[in-house]
Image (cartoon, rainbow, N blue to C red; front, top):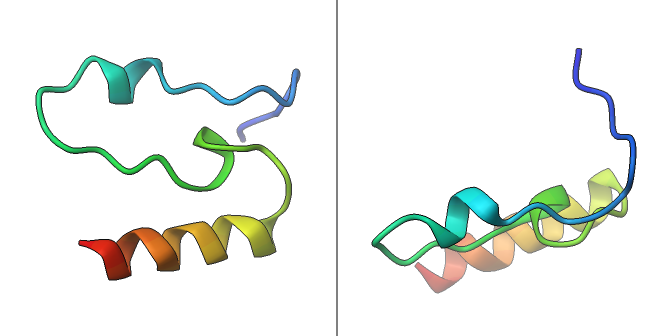
Length: 47
């Protein structure tokens, strides 16, 4: 089970890829599940 310890975004993997990446949810900005769903929806609509 994943455990959030520091509440900081982690985009290291996204920055290492050679394609367009849209960080969403806790990767972009740790907050709550509602915000994660909203950012994922916005990213999907962008694609």
